[in-house]
Image 1 (tube, helix red, strand yellow):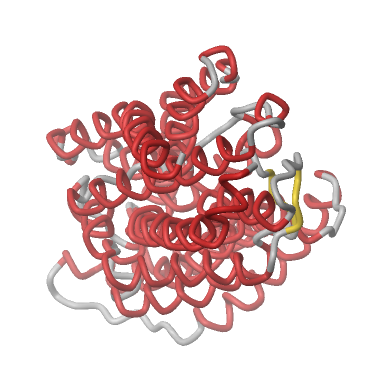
Image 2 (cartoon, helix red, strand yellow):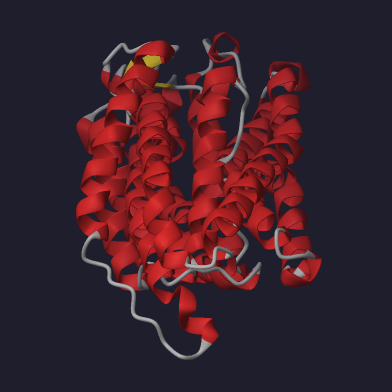
Length: 421
């Protein structure tokens, strides 16, 4: 308790700094990979993608980022075991934030798209294992996360593969691709409207107390799907078929149609991501603020001050704008060559996987689903269309993320304990 009384303001300042650093990493890595398909397929320029992400990520994070957040993130640690030692909790959260932020910085510099959730979970596991005891960690939750390394990319890849093959068969390989696009695009528009609505409601709006169950979300999404068909048709009427002698450009007008679809999916994915993943950065900050403001009392849940949410949302936008280009390049251009139709199939595959995961309780990483989805559309053109060296590096970075977060958290924990404990 004396640590809180003696160093309360300093610890609060450090929590804000490390929380902003972590949020910067979320923007530079996680948000960037969500925008990678749009930029890589040239449906959006990097400036447009950053602008869309800044607006929708900020709105998602600030408006729907959660009035209440678990102080002990992700149920990895039981808060009761630290009830008599609030200083331990504060050191643990500071260590976890700095460790996850540092790993995200390294991964972003290398251009590796890694899971921010796994980064912070790994850091919490590291702190709990050495700061409390190995038994304090919920290893069942950790096991679920490890299993998601395989499940989510495979599922997203399979869905994207199917979507792209359907677009290829129905539209791209048709005798008159533009005519076929006009015939089948309303179906894809409906699918986009339905899925992005489901993602937004199941992932993005669950924090603001709408209280919709899954069936109600499905019914509302059916209505949104029909509205998107109507709005999309207005945009599509402005696209004209401009045949060019070179067969390569026969699909130019068709790809512009798919580019319209990608703008819708990019906006919705940014909103859902901002509302859901901002907690990775501000959850530990909220825990430290709660303990210090209460004079050392540890609550299982705590009200989230508005300025903490603003800190997280601002950090995410700053990270994307200043360093997002590196991971965007990896997702958008280095795994496989993307066009708007392939990018659309990848984003829809990722969104569908997120919806399925929400419905079944399967823990998935948005990063892993998106990378898996890009692999799926690449594989639809054969193994030669994939850059296997880049894919190997990405898989290695996923495996390293948990131990890297844990190892860094252990180092930082002992440094804080030595200087402030």
